[in-house]
Amino acid sequence: MTNNLEAQLLALQEEGEKAIAAANTLERLEELRVSYLGKKGQLGALLRSMGQLSAEERPKIGAIANTVKDALQARIDQQHTALEKAQIQAQLEAENLDVTMPGIYRSQGRVHPLNGIIDRAIDIFVGMGYTVANGPEMETDYYNFEALNTPPDHPARDMQDTFYLPDGNLLRTHTSSVQIRYMETEEPPIRVIAPGRVYRRDNVDATHSAVFHQIELLAVDEGLTFTDLKGTVKVFLQEMFGDVEIRFRASYFPFTEPSAEVDLRWNGRWLEVMGCGMVDPNVLKAVGYDPEVYTGFAAGFGVERFAMVLHQIDDIRRVYASDLRFLRQF
Ligand code: DAH
Image (cartoon, rainbow, N blue to C red; front, side, top):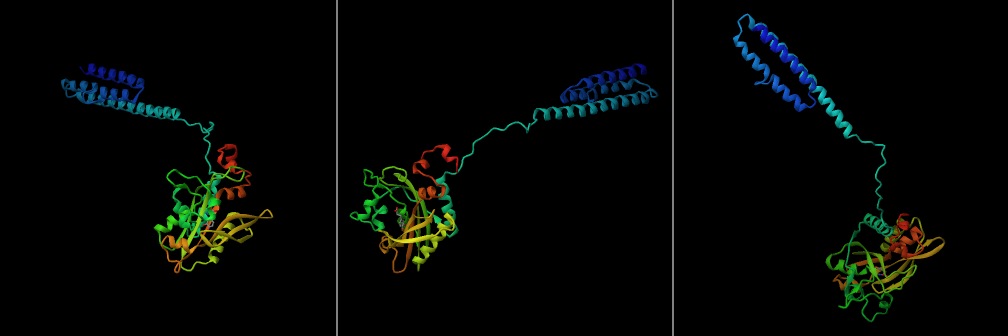
């Protein structure tokens, strides 16, 4: 009886060790553990038959059973470690990243030269306490002309012919219309700039376009004078163009009084870059401000002009052509 059980136990150990060594997955290994050492496993089944043994035989067989159990458990642990290691190794190899492989090139977008000018102007004016305002490109005659002290028979209208819509509205000729819209909804003190697209009935050539961009500037407060206008314009232009010489030349605009044009010294010549002036009292009245209490200054300039001067662009049509060979230079 003893010998028979002992032989069975040793046979079980041998068979188990072989099976464990052959297990090539962790799942298979777990199956084997349950099959040999589990509660209802083969070793347990053999031990249950120990009940038939005599009192002397039992400890001996019990000791053998323990060594069989320990041996199988040790083999399982060993195989478990080996399989786990192999699994990690396989995963590392599968997910291996070759950092020396050439990457996929994705071409980068960049800021269009016109937006670059607008961004810089905004940065400079925001630095002086200004905020940014917008208005519609399709305007009424009132906002584009009338409220800006330019009644229908005013000769200044000739300089700004535009596209008229069937309903009598028009495409704005300048961003000055935003002055009126802004003042209608806000109260002084006002410090605002308005960048945007404007339209003129112009024949297109190297320096003219029927669609272009302007930036409007407006400040309204108690006690603002021409000195404030000059200082603001000078700071802005010198931030934009460097330490250039600047001059104010008397001029005329319906919506400012007095008015001036601003020139800067560029490559040995005077270059006209913007119009400006003190907001005409009639404009303040049009939006319900008391011109006895408030004064203001305004200015307007063309974005394309700035871009062409700063980037030495010879033809305005280049900035609208979407030719990447041109745009990639900026
Ligand atoms: N709106 C003018 C134009 O398009 C530019 C301008 C001149 C705007 C004087 C102003 C200003 O605000 O004060 O030619």
